[in-house]
Length: 253
Image 1: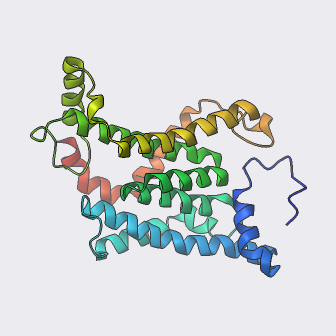
Image 2: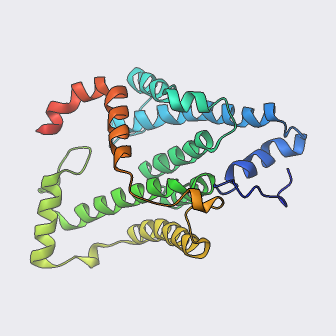
């Protein structure tokens, strides 16, 4: 690979090409066929990671249980999602960037937040918009910390996820008694610093670069695209219809 030349129309950072250079470069296999194999390998890894993530979600807060049939089938269902599956056969950033996003989420679930922040940074090098997923993981964990240190054991919910009642009670406690900084442990500070460094580095990149994309900036200006929200909602509603039908009533409660 020739990294001294760069196509000005390429919008993403060179994460995909760096991985390809590491995997295929030593064997001089940087042809179209073998470069596409990079994504095909990543798609197999994604299948494994999807199964792990589904198993973690199913067995939370005890994620070390053996892989269940439900988690296996859910992982396969996610891995063969049409847009993801077909992109697995071409040389594009989506598949490998999802690999690193999944690693970020899974590592965060296992409280390996330094490694999660590192894989999150790699996912951004693959595709800049993955900063949204890093911010989501960070926000979710900050919210969990907020609930944990501002709620008594009797007030803490036994549900898998934070709910409105938990958040409401925590906000009332902080407004009444102030934020209990004394309960913040070194582990919490490490978590916050790890993700904050990645997010601040990304903001610095945008400031220096002048755009979220690397090349072809005039054709990739950030703007509000309201119809995109409807496209996304329709897509999710179609492919998650069985899940929605099963969980809509418990969710509304």
